[in-house]
Amino acid sequence: MKTPGRILSFVALISLLAGCGSSSVEVRPDALTSTKKIALIQVSEPDSYVGQDFGSPAIMFGVVGGAIAGGSSENARKSLDQLAAEAKFHAGSRFTNLLKDELIKSGYKVDLISVKRENKTKLLEAYDNVDASGADAILDIAIESIGYATEHPLLSPEWRPASQVHVALVDSRNKNTIYSEKLMYGYHNPFMSGTDIDAPKEYFFKNKEALFADASKLVEGMKGSVDAVVGHVVLKLKK
Image (cartoon, rainbow, N blue to C red):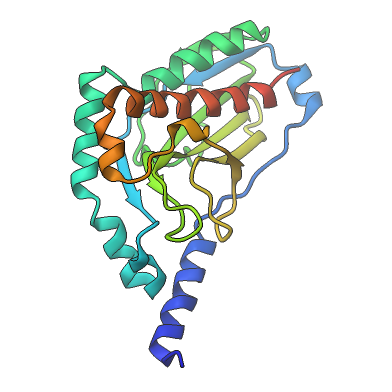
């Protein structure tokens, strides 16, 4: 029989995960029709590339176990950072450059702008002070996390590229949100709201040892994480 404490921990875990989502706004076609020029805010580099072991059995024992499972991957975080640096992989720069190129291909004019952020993992709270330089809309991208993760200790224990990214397109004139979405690449959780994007099975690794055994493939998986999210956003903004 489950103890009351165990039940409370499980309920707390459900509540915690359920609160990790974000509201979304579907694209308004009429707004896209009148959008010719986009001011793209340069995407901030993540402080660290994270390895999150949600496939650990410890995650099954409530919030404390989940915290231990996430904290146990400190060495993985350091290794991911080192491998990314050696490969000259910078997620923020890749997001920025690829978004600019693909939006231009889609027919938009794009200006790169920079802003000061209090929290680089979140979208800006307001855009009143953003200098859009005559653009019709402001595109804001925030990387909440990027790296690798496992998903479930029994059903999906493999390490796969994983990222959580927030995106918003805001009308630069009235500051109304034209489009917003949270994208979850690779790692999916039924208690977290967001749009799931599957990672290719070719970048799944059986365990942490296999993950770090092929540095080139590991970094390619993270590059694919960025590319897939950019592809999704550009498709959403296609006129």
